[in-house]
Length: 78
Image (cartoon, rainbow, N blue to C red; front, side, top):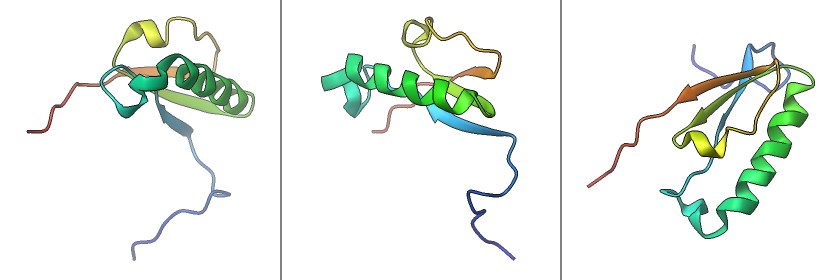
C-alpha cells in the first residue's frame, strides 16, 4: 500500500535544496539564502539536515554537526 508519511513519523533527516542563480530564486538570491540558512539551523537543533546545493559558495558559511552536504547536478530542460 502506498501512502504519504505524516510529519510525526520517525525520519532520518530533512532535505533542503538550497537556491542558486539558475533558479527562480535568482531575483532575490541573497535573501533566499539567508532564509534557507535560518531554516537549516532551526531544523539542525533537532535532527540532521541534508543540504543539496549546486554552487558551493551558497553553502560555504554553513557549519553544524547535523548538516550533511550533497552536490546536485545542473539538469537543464529543453
